[in-house]
Image (cartoon, rainbow, N blue to C red; front, side):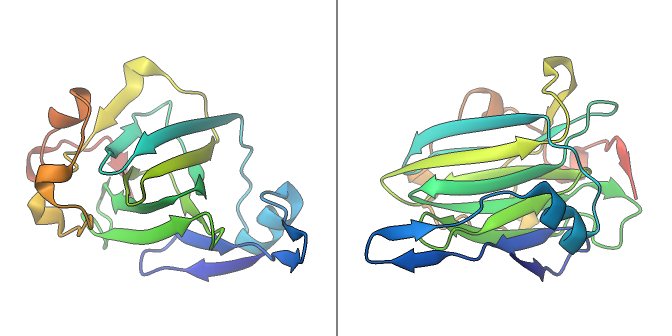
Length: 185
């Protein structure tokens, strides 16, 4: 696996080594030992989640409040998504900035989103199957979010606004400027 650093410390793109031939391909989608060695992160993933969505679905920008914070390792196993992590750690030199990466069934890339970041994605293909590992169990009482349509974040979701499909919950998240962050750098 290759670790690609981004413009925000701790947010990583991971490219697995893919072995292909006339039969198809094979790769290790996760190896705890190699992940720890190459990222220098001692993370124990405890929950795997999967969602299926259609074109235009936007999910996020979600996070879990302390003490239920989560780091995530995400990937798209079918289709194509734009995946985004927004720094919401008070005092961080990159507060309010984001990293966006396309995750596809063809590039097999994974995206590591550390604690203290809001996370979301937009489906760019007809359908997408999205999987992610979390290092803490989901706690509904700790659910939080930032508006995925906050124009001040400067995120190009690659979907026309009139084509965006959001859950009722995701339409009610606050803008970053009105947000009281529970995270510190």
